[in-house]
Length: 92
Image (cartoon, rainbow, N blue to C red; front, side):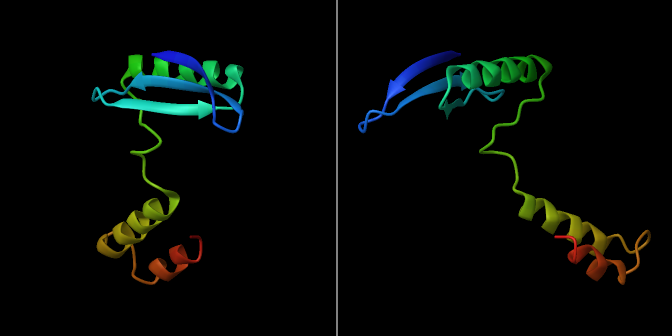
């Protein structure tokens, strides 16, 4: 895990944090400020130690989470009425 200073072709300075996730896959995230990169590194270090880290690229989007929520409402016939599905849809 490392934080490196980078300069883009147009001269913009940014800080890049490189690390390996729980599956051993290399990940990287860039920041405008070194302090932000350090804070993210601290967060990732603790999440990896706890075994709870999920990369931003592998987590699902809000839209995908909403679709899963609706699907579960449709198929949980025993605990939910079908009338509640349209009610849930308006919150997405």
